[in-house]
Image (tube, rainbow, N blue to C red; front, side):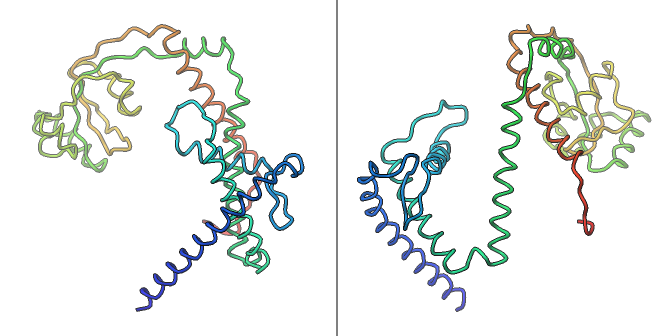
Length: 286
């Protein structure tokens, strides 16, 4: 019964809020008509409070970005989107004013929530700033290209198990002459490849998780790993069937990939430095 009452109460609140929003739409239209008399840089004045145009632009940009596909070219907000954003900004400002008047902003939980949002907003912008500041020269790109390891096309099989002890037992059985295929079919958690005797097929080493690729590339055809290989999927015992070196791709074909990688590395280094240079004191262990 209490749950039903809570649902009804929430429904009434939502209906009331919707009615306020409709009323404010008319107020926004009136405010838009009077924009010529507003001070420079002000989007709207609500109960004497000037709301900067920068706030309206930020709201618009956020909403437009949410409607776009990743990687799409930025677009301008439509007239309807601009009117709706202004309406919503007026609503938010009025509700915030009333909340402050009622002391809601001084409640401990509210103040903590506002502080968390403030910290998160600034923290999310810092990596973006680091990315803008990243300077990658042509020499840097050439050096990164020179350090690229040639790829290889591998034909591999594996037995995937949940723990190191089981992986070691698989290796022990292989050394005793038990067939790889039978162990894969019986023990592998990767049931797809397990049904094929552990065969994963042929693929470029660069497409495999790093731990798996490094171990597989180090093998000679016909060999299996003498130590278990741990990855995010579990513990692997890997057998290499064949390995074909691949020519390094031309510099121009990977230039953008290298640029992105170096810029990301710059951001990660800056974020790591922020953490390492900080003076952090914990009152108690988390």
